[in-house]
Amino acid sequence: MKKSIVIQSIVILLILVTWNFIHLGYKLQKQAYFEKISEVPILVFSQNSEILDSLKTQLSFAGYVSKIEIETKTEIAEKLISKYELNSIKSVLENHSLPDVMKVFLEGENFDRARKEELLLMLSGTDLKTECNPEDWNILFDKIDFLDKSYQVINIMIIIFTFFITVFMQIHFEYKQDKFWYVYESSGGKYGQRRKHFLISSFFAIFLPAILVYGSYLLLINFSYLTIKIDITSFGLEILVLLISTHISQSILRKRLI
Image (cartoon, rainbow, N blue to C red; front, side, top):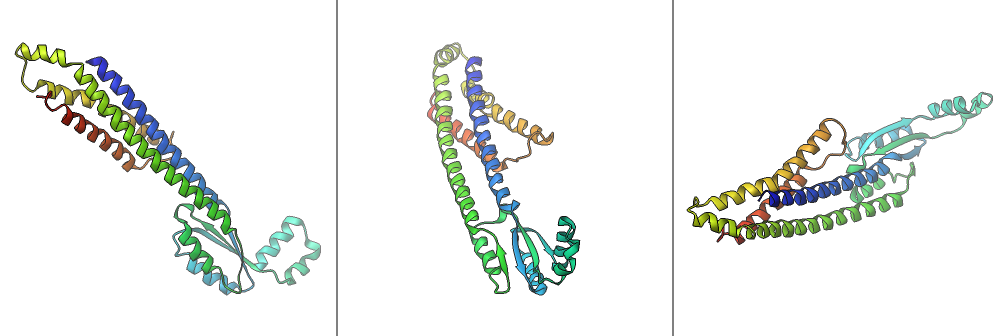
């Protein structure tokens, strides 16, 4: 009996560890895509500072904008003079009609196709010149969509596999104990003991690995060995799958578990 519990525990532990590595891989890759959206700012040029100030006010209320910076033509001229040692043509730069520049940094996690269209509409003013590449965003959106769909398919496959392997192991090992329980009951063993044993075995073989995995995850997060957080719903789904699997096994074995 102990051997069957150990075998089931190891199998379930391997499944859960693999499943949670998939959760982490998904989170890491998606975060990488979000960072690509966030790392390159949108540049907006205008000769009219009031237009940029008005646009900044509008964008400050957008949940997909993380930061906005405006540099005036005077600040730009001073930076060029300082960086490239252009003191000899300082008066030329100061008199030249340089535009003001606004840098818009996006919050990749909150930016999507609908918000992209909203943003482009806001930046389409006649007195504005914008430097950005919407096609790069579309490519990243496509990659994110593919990642989401792949993650869903993999989760469904793991759920089906976990259902199958959990039910199979519980029924298989319970059948192998028929002889023991026959002798036990023939010897006047306590009524209902087999069902109680099944539930206890299920806890140690099925749910203890889940507790160990979740506990290990919390420790890694607490000691900052892991910075990417797995959604609590993912752990809830894992527990739910194990609970339903155990319930199915118990229903199939109901005539034996008396």
